[in-house]
Length: 148
Image (cartoon, rainbow, N blue to C red):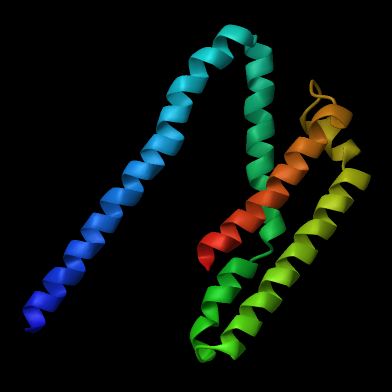
């Protein structure tokens, strides 16, 4: 009986892995395959470099904004029993994560221009900073959701 349970668990694990891998490939892989010809035909190499720099900046800022809270949530997950105490714990972590990342986003918009101009000279702070900063903010929400 024990062998059939572990085979069943292994089967579910492989099926889930295949499903998520296929979904990730369709979402990310095909979007890049479709977007690269469109971007390269409409953007100059300089503009394409700006897009790549802005994307990398958004990802980096997203990691800074997370402030380690999703990892902390999983670290202490098993200390709380199922039910209201665990739900309250995750709610507190989520609100703290929103507050910290929101404060960082507002500080970046208010005081980030000198840093922006030293790294990304060819992209206007006024035009692109909001997209990058709030993209990073929503990345934090998405990451925390996947942790839950």
